[in-house]
Amino acid sequence: MTSSILHLVVQAMDDKRGENIVALNMKGVSVIADYFVICHANSDKQVQAIAEEVKKSAQKEGIEIKRLEGFDQARWVLIDLGDVVTHVFHKDERPYYNLEKLWGDAPEVALEGVID
Image (cartoon, rainbow, N blue to C red; front, side, top):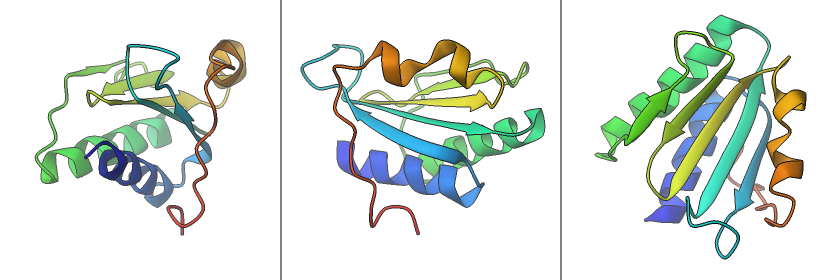
């Protein structure tokens, strides 16, 4: 189930033109989630569009959204889908938080074949 949620999130991000999509395998690194999926967008509206697409795609598949934060500000939207936590950044915020470096112990998941 977790890998299908991961694929759903990555596809939703890609459909709304999320940039530099990265998935981190958090198993054994953090108890928060099995995967973090991170991307960024070039405007507030695009951040919200990506977050909305992830939310709609999850709901369509009956996946519970445990938490959604930051949507109104559209600088960093966090969508907690349980085993998969999604981070949608505004392009100006992503380098500041640099989650990829913060969670540098987590291996990156190959997304070939997931992103068209």
